[in-house]
Image: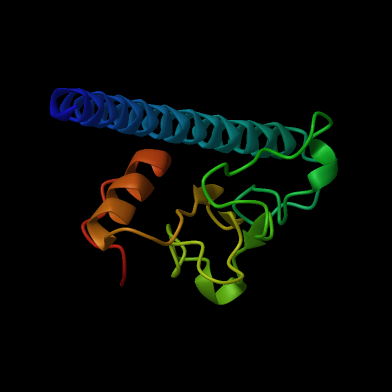
Length: 156
């Protein structure tokens, strides 16, 4: 009987380990897909900005030649999504005039009601925000990866 119990415990332990590893691999794959989808979304937004800037008559442009805002109607197939921050956030924040010199939003994480994406019409830059959670170092690494940047600090 003791041998049966020992074997049963061993099988349960093995099943638990396999399940845990499978779950970790699944979650990592899911995150990689979300990162790829968000990067694709960024590229799509930037392509539309370049197109609208080239078609000057269609939209209001800033003095440097970028659209003053991003119109969701440009995206006939649906808005590009930031798959990492979830649906509870606004889609796009447009930088205010006092932020026109910035290349990155002040808030790089999608904290509270921060938008999933940030657009600066003065320089045509779009950035994807990252979710809150984990360490600041992990958030910074993800921000840099999504936005093809090399910031040294998540905060100013």
